[in-house]
Length: 126
Image 1 (cartoon, rainbow, N blue to C red):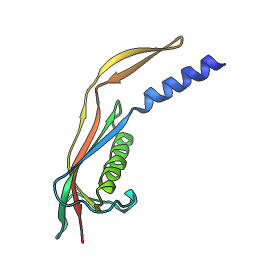
Image 2: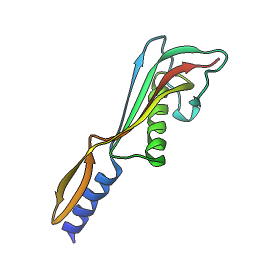
Image 3: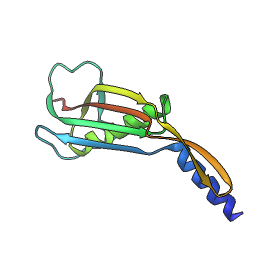
């Protein structure tokens, strides 16, 4: 039973993938805000102050779920530098290469190196 639970946990972890993000401050950072306060823009708002660049990468995942996870990470990174908006920039999916990993007696095929990425300009909208 214990072996089954460990195998199940390993498979679940590999299926979800890993989300990472970063930010670069190019302007004046402000006190941190909550990620829910960050709004996404596809067109720049009329007035804004550019604060930096944010990016997110979701490994081994594509599609809407990966995009949702990347947006969540973008907002988290933007909130750290105190902005309330992100002007979406580049996005993409990268193909990975299949890798077989043994989880106990179960062979798990996962894709490494591929995933979904998003980036944007972190802005403060007055």
